[in-house]
Structure formats: C-alpha cells, structure tokens
Length: 332
Image (tube, rainbow, N blue to C red; front, side):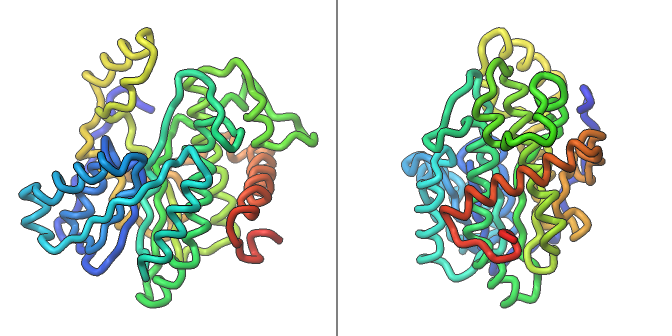
C-alpha cells in the first residue's frame, strides 16, 4: 500500500437504488456509517443497519434521516436497525432468521463489520476473534442469506450483490514466514490460526483478510456471478476511529500517518459503493484496491496459496454447514 494514496474519482451522480434493500454491517461509525449515508443519498429504499448496540443504532438512524442531503435525495427512505454481533455465530443466525421473516427481498449486503485486536482473543466459537469477526461471520451471513439474494435476482433479472470490506494488508500474512502452514499435513487452516501464538496485531489482521480473499476466490471458481456477484474492496488508510484502541506505541505513529495521508470516510464510501453497485462481473471473487481490481500476490498465485485456498474452503464449509443449509454444489 503506497504511503501517499492516489486520488480517486467521485461517484457518478446518476446512481439510483430505488426499490432496493441493502444490509450494512458495522453501520454506526466510520466507513460503515458513510456507506449507509451514501446508499441513502443513492435513493436505496430500505436500509438495514446491522449493529451490535441497538440504542446506538437508533441514534444514528435518527441522525441520518435528519441530514439535509439524505432527506433531500430520499425523503421516503426506510431505515431499520437490527442487532448483529459478528463475534457470535448465534447472533448472526438470529439476525438472518429475523431478516428472512421480515423482508421479502435483498439486493445488497455490505459486510463491513471488522476489528483488529491488540492481543489475541478467542470468540465464543473458540476461533481467534479477528478471524471470527472479519471472516467466519461474513461467510455465515452471506451463505445463510444466499437463497433470498438469488430469489431477488430472479425477480429483478439482475444479479444481487455482496461486498465485503477487505484489505491489501493480506500480503502481511503470518503464513509467509512467521507461521507457515504445514504442507500436505492434517492441520486444518482454521485449526492452525486457532492454535497460533506470538503473532502481532498486524499479522492476525492480515491473516483474517487473507482468508476472506481466499474464500471469495474459491467461491468464484464454483459459482458464476449471474445471480449473485461477490467481491471485496480495500479503501486504503482511512481517517476513522478504528485505530483508537491501538496500544499507545502503535497509536501515535499511526495517527501521524493518518494525519499525513489518510482518506476521508466520504472517499472510502466512494470506493465501497464503486465495488458494490458499479463494478462489473469481472470483479466477482476479486479484491478491488481503491477502484481497480488488485493483482493477486505471488503467494496467492503459487502452489502453496492455491493449496491453502482449497483446504480453507473445505474447513469453512464443514463448519458452516452445521449452522445453515448449503446447496449441494458447495458440499460436493
């Protein structure tokens, strides 16, 4: 990722999401809040804010509806606040179940919720927390709601969309040097990261984003984009509060870097919506760096990366199928 980030183009003025329903996770702050704002200005009809704290979500909902730009562009917009804690499989399941009972259609999922923990933590699933929040819960949410996405695409004659917030930091994965996965062994990919010790915050975050990209690459090989198109985007360094929880020795230099080069949340929103509503089928399964498809690293292209991609798919599907119904093509 370059120190000085290149300029990016603003979104076209003619985006019109009238009649569409979108889910945004991690919707109350930072990039997620800006995504919500820009979807509303783009005239999305139904916005579902998937949040950890309902009370905060309701305050943000009222503030969004009161914004002149939102009210002027989309005075009839409906915003619904629903609970979703990506640290918990059961919370994702409850959210998906409630959604299916309440809504008929789903045109877009923006899976934006994410974390970078300063110390290793374990989620209730006993998986490492970054991997649970940034990867596994996104998989469960996407695959559980895949049938309603497909049904919506059939009704409209246009592919539904799923976009995850990714990161080019995946190239810093611990698999390269620090803790490589055993070749040809019995060790599963998820098992490997659950047991990993001594990794830095950056490496654990990078590992979680690598898994996101590997899963989407494998999905795209098995599932064409004609009904549901899935991709991810990296907005670069953005001036949000996500770094506020960093240890002081990391927060100070990070804040200096943010002051010099970070993008505004508004520009990050442009990058997000470009991936979610403008980019074409050629981005299916791909990571967009800013607004262009990012070339895969040599690790991803190599024998080891390809093998890990297949092993991760098997591990993930084996786990997720215990919590939701999956189509036969995923489990074969």
